[in-house]
Image 1 (cartoon, rainbow, N blue to C red):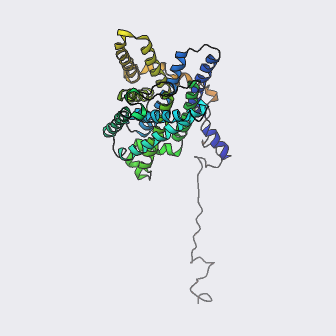
Image 2 (image 1 turned 180 degrees about the horizontal axis):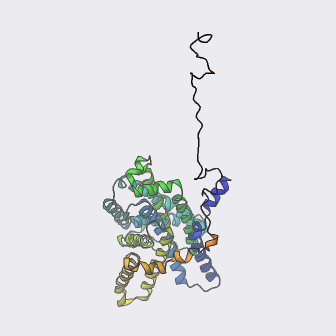
Image 3 (image 1 turned 135 degrees about the vertical axis):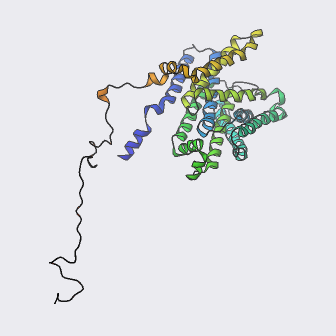
Length: 381
């Protein structure tokens, strides 16, 4: 019976919302691809959306759930992209399957990025707030500068990677599903509760016996791993892999995805990553020539409008009216609403509130007539 209750508790419909969103996107786009209605530019956009979602969700684990500000996510992506694609170039000489090469390179890029996350996180996570942001930002700039000057990785001209000839967006969305499965299960486990406890009050978390250093490193390494995987996906559709892509501005862009989607909101990160990637793609294609200078102005104006809409107190009524949760919230008839299962009239083992309790107390009195004095023998004289 307890097992059935646990299964029901862990299989609530809301837990599958993110999987359904990504699965629907994948099914629709794959159907369009099979019927010949998906343009190549749209396939490229979908590949960009897939690794953007991975980056946003993984950074949300650090910023939203752990409460630490990291600006070096593009640096971990850079490490995964360069080393993963470098390994992929060597594997193509021995393995004929491009999909297998892509999978192996994603694992290699993710593991190497995770190792760098551990190396950087061990001393850096002793810092807090702006100091941690500065250290992670410096890491991202140092990493891309190193790859810029390494001739083995192409130097300033970039690393020539082999473009994946299959449907890269399909692989990307499958990786998104794996990322969601791992991160959501971490968040909903006892480890996730420990992570959010550190975010809410680190001193109280330490007092409760939570290993704060362990969980901070754990979150940092997991986020770095998925950033490295996203970098490999990027490197298999954008060739050559250029150091200039992994700049400070791109780390800020990933952070914007997390903030606009909501801190600690995985569904919001998916939606924000999709929207921002789509806006950037449209601005790059629509604004060309002299109008290209207006790209960042239009992009900034859109972000300002979104931030004001999400935070202005005067627009709270409008936000509530057009809220997605409002439409998804089930409206039940009053007759279908049941009382609490632990109500007094539904649990027979509990005592009624109007019941009077009485306790019979029996006291042994040595001076009662029918009882002899235990200190005398044979009764009284």
